[in-house]
Picture 1 (cartoon, one colour):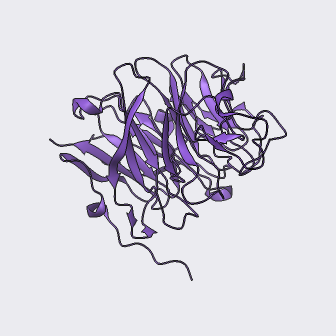
Picture 2 (cartoon, rainbow, N blue to C red):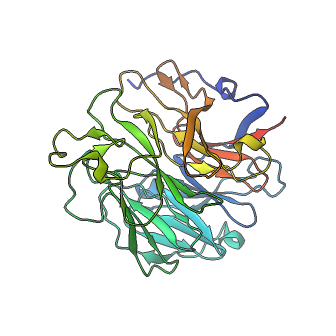
Picture 3 (spheres, one colour):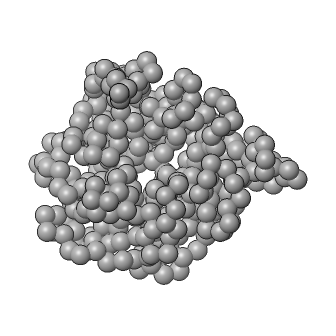
Length: 356
């Protein structure tokens, strides 16, 4: 028998004073990465494969904070987790390739055939969900997770973050030693890349921590598979290695919380103390004896934007006891200053805003 569903609803979500939460859209199965187009349409990648491997569009033409419809853009894709928008085109990252739907906003119900942008990504499904985003340099960033819990991958492409031009050319590596990042963003002022990374499993309930990392220059190595959280050695692979050989996390996060699609808050509608700070959706642990995560956390930075000062809960309540009714995946700051949250367990997208 399947486990009982947790008794939870929007009233279960606890937020700081003045904040509110509501459904932006329901009936969005497997909702994962979010992106917004110039006209305000929200696009949603999903974690399903085969005929259920769909991408959705959520238009909100009357700007009432709720999607007008859930429109299927594509189906039959290979776990189309990642979505990004550039110059009117929707980019979708499957496990093995990146495709593009041109002039998408004008063709939501009759989308064009996709153009293949890049088809040389590994097809290994383990840590194969691709999160994509265009950086301040105009390049498209795509990670390739490790094909294992912890191992020395046979191919150097695994455990990396990479970037390429919008036309699929110029593929190059920017970071190594990254076990599995499914979320990154750029500081609005420094333009440095920050990303979450999930620690390995099977070392215990409280080891190792997940990571929040800062890429200060291309080519940095973040420790995988030798060290996790900056100072936790892999019991089988760390011989001959020391922690100071690798870039340490900007902040250690909770163990096994599965920190995913982080975002800097770039709007102006939240109180000043939240601006240019990092919000992290924690998807939640899968094999910890007492579950952790299933929430959104906040990491506050110092005035330089380079040092993490604190790590605290922001939105909690998707976990009731030891049963979850939702699992936050990805965040998106809308032009109106509200914050969207995708949930692949409940098949929904929430909207959080500040009411004062």
